[in-house]
Amino acid sequence: MADQSVPQARTPEATRKAPGGHGPLDSDNAEKTTAPEGISRRRLLGTAGATGLVLGGAGAAAGYAAAPSSAAAALTSLGSEQAMFHGKHQPGITTPMQARGHLVAFDLAAGAGRKEAAALLRRWSDTARRLMAGEPAATRDTDVARDAGPSSLTVTFGFGHNFFGRTGLEKQRPVALDPLPDFSSDHLDKNRSNGDLWVQIGADDALVAFHALRAIQKDAGSAARVRWQMNGFNRSPGATAHPMTARNLMGQVDGTRNPKPADADFDERIFVPEQPGPGKGGPAWMANGSYVVVRRIRMLLDDWEKLSLKAQEDVIGRRKSDGAPLSAGSDATETTEMDLEKTDGSGKLVVPINAHARITRPDQNGGAAMIRRPFSYHDGFDADGVPDAGLLFICWQADPLRGFVPVQRKLDRGDALSQFIRHEASGLFAVPGGATEGEYVGQRLLEG
Image 1 (cartoon, helix red, strand yellow):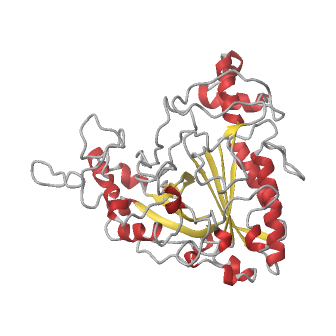
Image 2 (cartoon, rainbow, N blue to C red):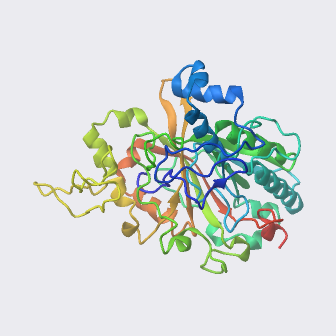
């Protein structure tokens, strides 16, 4: 888990400023803010929303009235960031990590087929486009996000293995969507796994994210029913002095070796090519799409937190303080290259042979790589007071048989982290390319 994820720094490719708002936070200085040039239609001055934010940050509602103008500017900047619905790829894949997330899977209702699925994806796409622009839903908007800007909202849609049989499109089902193999670490709850349709929602504001979740669920109407739903969170943008890789609930810097869009082979590893075919991502409707593996991984935090700092670092293979490899010197950073052969004075490997960061390296897995873009979760405590918490693992790749599967197989054979985590739910979904203007997501499949 620790060596592939997406940094939280905002990038120009992922967001733009909403009408009347600000552009993304400066990627070199997450604390930089500027005065608003205007106020968007979805104003950010609602008393309850503004006071609630200050209650979380300052501990008193009176803090809002006394706060300097720069605090209001920061709120406006965060709320005005907007991700684009239309594009070559769907949003929520390379979009920087958001503070709040919802994952929800649906099964088509009895009697619903291709026609009903097409109408549903048309409704969903229109709702996603409107909400991502900071506009209300077309019908029966709940007003939950009435005072907020777009807040980097993204809505992403995918199709599960059984969707194609339910809609008479078996011949269009990609080979890459064949069920994942069983792994020895699996303790999967089938009721919280898979599904005909999958939706990922992310935003930097909890109410904006919930608003989208509720709208999507309402749009499903009689065509589909919720199979399972999970909620997650990440650190809020701007919460650190400068943009940095996120930490997971084990306190580890999580995401150092994630592929980056600037890499020459990034698109080849993550996205189905423009002209897919046998061995190249599957049928034509998957052009510019990707495959996502979703796993609910429970962290056994009570056991993990009993370990000494050195023991935790040996499990991961990196320093907990800054994510630098154990083989590096005191002045190293998380991006310093790991020396897998370095030994200590007794001849023992400095990075243990079963360290998680060693095992997950692409050069230890035939070049297998994927974007990991997870959310943490906490669903309360069991009867013994043990936290039900961990990672909503979400990884993207052009082909799961060349991405997730070989890495997980190797982890299955001896990852030191495996005794502190448990895979409790799983899903694999085909996520088609982005919709062009006037098109809905999946239209090339459902109407092709």
